[in-house]
Amino acid sequence: MATFGSAAIANQNPNKSSEVAQPPSDSVSSLCFSPKANFLVATSWDNQVRCWEVTRSGTAVASVPKASMSHDQPVLCSTWKDDGTTVFSGGCDKQVKMWPLLSGGQPVTVAMHEAPIKELAWIPEMNLLATGSWDKTLKYWDLRQSNPVHTQRLPERCYAMTVRYPVMVVGTADRNMVVFNLQNPQTEFKRIVSPLKYQTRCLAAFPDQQGFLVGSIEGRVGVHHLDDAQQNKNFTFKCHRDNADIYSVNSLNFHPVHHTFATAGSDGAFNFWDKDSKQRLKVSLISNLHSNLFCLLLEQFYFCFLIIDIGFGSKKR
Image (cartoon, rainbow, N blue to C red; front, side):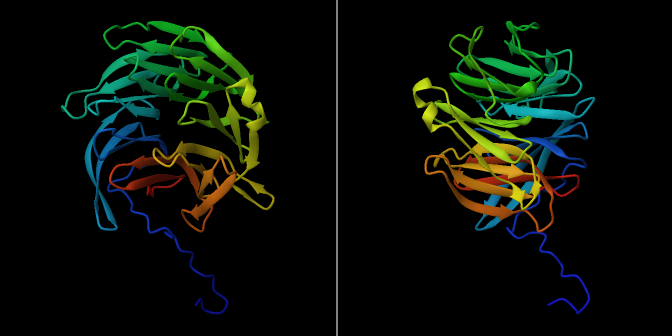
């Protein structure tokens, strides 16, 4: 109980989260788990790419810093190669670095753009790396070559990208949603205007490749199906709002087993949803303060792991 006349002390860790050892010194921009082991990689605005090994003993989760490497400017995106040996990262220095993390090798530049690289994805079915940039291009890279195997012009700057082979969706400025069938990647499959009225912030393709989620800065998520015959199933819903205050939806991610999904917002909350029943399953606050959640990751190993970044601060859980 607070003393009369004094403010109550907010619970700064209501979910009993575990903070990583030696966290980044600036906001985290992306998170990705190794597909083969319990290695977590984070990129951040302090120009760094860091890797931790995550372990669990009972309900206690711990992390051990394993390695790090640098870019010349803030790093915006990252992904693992499907064999779990290599990390790719890109950002404001307009280049993608390939980091052979497990072998201890030095990072090398494998892709370049004329403006910052906002998104990237390794596509194992094609053995290619895809990169989306603010230079209004999408490029595909064969790592054995120095030049892209294909450059696709986008209608505007790339803001978000999601891949569930053979579906790729790229969200750009001016609310464009460009859909590609990666079995024919040189041709747009479909271009639509976002069902949301404001700037696109994040995308997540359905696990069954039948559609995608889109989140915006307006505290709203759109559920969109690709099949014209299923357009009656499309809908949007409000989230990450507190009365008159509206917060950005910064990240979307599907659970790899249950296929429910989570959203993270600038209100300091992450919500779990079931799109088929149109229900919110759970809402959790990372703290009782309005902290910015920039990244969210759901992974399934022998346990389910959720990673959240608190922006504008040094604490990463």
